[in-house]
Image 1 (cartoon, rainbow, N blue to C red):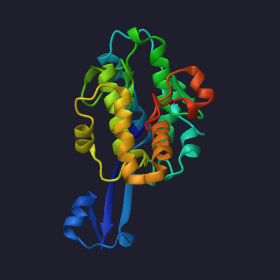
Image 2: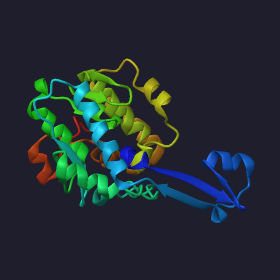
Image 3: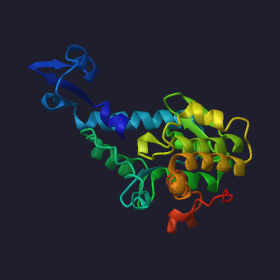
Image 4: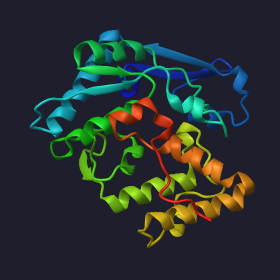
Length: 263
């Protein structure tokens, strides 16, 4: 939705009477520019352009994954359980940017003409995983979301990289516990302050046992959060964990269960 709608508009910025094609060019010309005085200018192409962008992108995905017997798309609707679960900081609280002009139009197009379904109470990512696991041998998930790589045995198609990849059980576990350490800035999940991907990789290096991975993560949470370590870790794990079964939808906050409780 975002890529198709964004491709059907241009965004420029005006400051002191001069218009700039991008924020970077403006900052280069005026390093100390007052944000309050910067005017954002959006010029939208016709609505049909956004829908055509979407149609072409979807067709390219189907072509890349051919032969395709059937397909289904999922869109995140209202009532995401993670908003209520998050107490450390608001889930996705950092997403304040305005949506592109034709965002809603592309969303409607996907639902009405492209076999799209709006899911409520959970995220589209959750539903994608649930559907994939019903028939993993004959399914591929088309997504650019890195969170999907926490699912054991999933096959992913990234339409920007134009590649299909298989995520092994070992890689999936490592990806999940890496995110537990680093958090997810995109969704405003805090993780452990000061730990980035390289540090997380070093901490989990050569570890394949899930209990040991959890123990390593807990040790870092203890250093950072003291008495709140376990509660913070559990909250973040539940926020990061993607649902696996239809039964999880009824009680999504209980879908993630720790493999053990570290001492």
